[in-house]
Image (cartoon, rainbow, N blue to C red; front, side, top):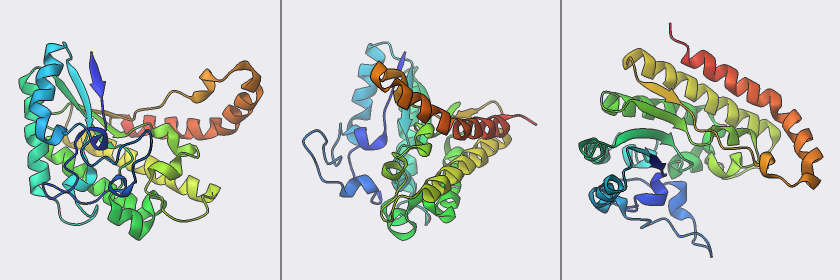
Length: 249
């Protein structure tokens, strides 16, 4: 039994430890959403959190590395203080018999990359993400067996793409959606191959969100079927690339 979180939902410490700004750090609080700056304060209280998890019998924890904590600008120098934090974080899980699972991206694009390149619409952001992912694998690949590249990767062929990819300006065109999806899939393939080549026995996948269509009322069934048919080729492309990327030589 385990649980799953994102960094912005839990860490807090948005301006501590050398962390750079992410797109979530400029979001205004709303009626049903906080401003993310404190969250559950896991950055300061993770030992207490892990003790509670152990008491509950949890044996796995899927957490996210904050890209902007490891690399404040997304594509510049790495932040050794941030890397050291996650090293202690992982050791604390292992010490309690809780298996760590790392997710590399859960929607919190470094603000500098979003502002400069408009997020994953630009190939340079894909290249920056691969560089960041390789660094995290180099640092923690000997300790962590289970890895995810992108949270809910199937969202990247849906309109939600523009909310989660660091997209800050534009007309949200179909071409841009395909560019984002292409860069996300290529990044996944590059990092999966890198993990398999450098850390034998370690496994990487991508988290997929359950399609909303299976929860739609019957009155919307035909719209759901039509939508699913339209998107089926995209999902097949995603799955095909993932299978090829994970195939062992």
